[in-house]
Amino acid sequence: LWSLPPPATITQAYNEDIKQWKGYRFIKSEDDRSDTEQVLKKYYGNIKDIFYHLAASSAWPNIGSLDFCDFAGKAKILDNVVNISSVDRTFIAATLKVTESTAPSNGLRRFEFLEILVRLGNIKFLESKIVKTYAEATEKLLKECVIPYFVPEPWQEFRNKQLWTMDVNDIFEANLTNLKQIYGNYKTPTKGYMELVDIIQMCTADTAIAMSEKDIAFCYGYSHMTVINEDRQWKKYLSMEFVEFLEFLGRLAHARFKNSSAEMASQ
Image (cartoon, rainbow, N blue to C red; front, top):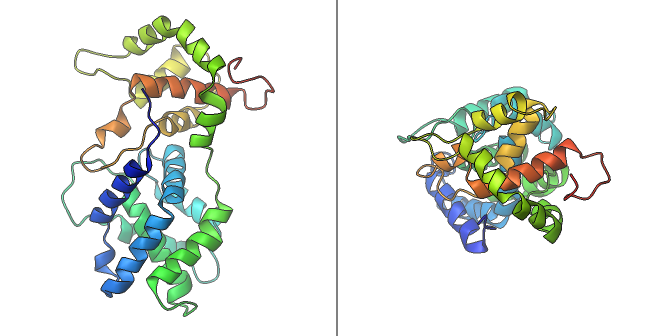
């Protein structure tokens, strides 16, 4: 079954990200670096949700540069101190590879998203001498800009209030055999799961959903479970398990009929 990431899973994901991030390359004070990592840990739940929203809207499972610049504007990071050029430079620095990885990357990965927020906090608040440490700058950026001004699409709240209900469960149960058959139609002898290309095929060519590929791709990305180690488990981002497929259908219906007053089960 699809599982809600318990606090231990979130902590594990944070620990894996911190193992990979390059804070040691630019935060020279070990105390400040440790304090900065604690700030990231404190707000990691918010950061993770924002990352998944942006990645699902962009170059899943990464965030492209143009989409990140758009986010920087919406999150009130851009101002007379932090301009587009600053964002572009930090994007390049955050995505600089210093270790070998087999994970595909066409933008910011999750641990790199942590890094770029710290780098931008530095430019906005530390270099301008508003604060004295990276840790203070990072917390100020998160508390005053990112979290209040960029609210991601409900991730867990959608499941709790809309998807995990008896009515929706009854719909899935009644159609489970057909849904498994549909899911199985896109599997091959060498690929036992659905991919984004299959989802797009199903929703645009094989059926008449009347939704854009961008909206379909967002529902696909947002239906994935938390991946703890992006470096070793990156293939989980590019495949969709059956339980994730069920959530995808729920999110797709919700997005398709978002202006409808009908209950989720009816959608």
